[in-house]
Image 1: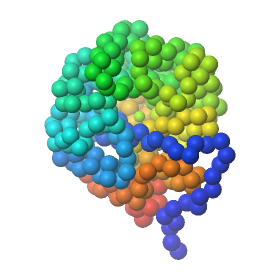
Image 2: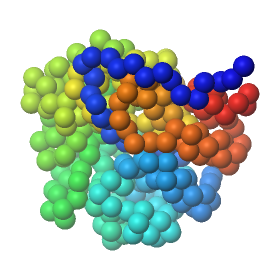
Image 3: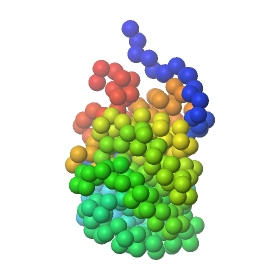
Length: 314
Ligand code: MG
């Protein structure tokens, strides 16, 4: 008996030829790991991801160290990565102008801000109302664009909120419009607690499109808490989305939402894309090796099903 190491390729009509995988493991993944990792291990992680063919890798976060101690080594990480590790496709998260200053000083040319579709999560994550957080982001986005940087806007809790419950599509669209009106280049729709289902995904993408934010500007960020991440991704691809967020090994969740576990694993996404014949540029075996190595660093197995299937009995 042998474990298949590649799926058979059978395309489905209506899906794109090529997908950009936006890797969030070093930031979204590691920020939610309780095991603190030495900066050298993080540098090695990023280098392995780049070597595996991932082009877009979100590196770290310039939030205050007291908010996210796991990423308190952002400056050091960028220093050690050097110019080869930076560039247009290596975004960092910035919460405010102070964070932006720190990022720009390090030569960052791609940034991400993070808004919330709900008032409760905006308050918990940013200690501000939704309106106040948009106000805080306005100069960050303006100054980023002035400096020639590319800007992504994350929106959390697009499909449900652990405190508020269901989140009306109209409210999500309203927050997305406010952030995109600042001039952001890309929107990333976050299902922070993983409750979304494919019809809901299509409904939101349609509503955004009607409001003037087309799928070519939109990325999706799904969590696998309820096992829906890949189904939701396929629904989004069928609706014209071309950028999918994923975390190698399935690292990470959300520190402010206890019910959230696991980003969509990059390996699980790659398996599906390979089976569909969709180009993505990533070497699956190299990713699995990276996740197996990272599992050793963290002292726990990778949540990704594909990693478990390919890495042996684990
Ligand atoms: Mg996430």
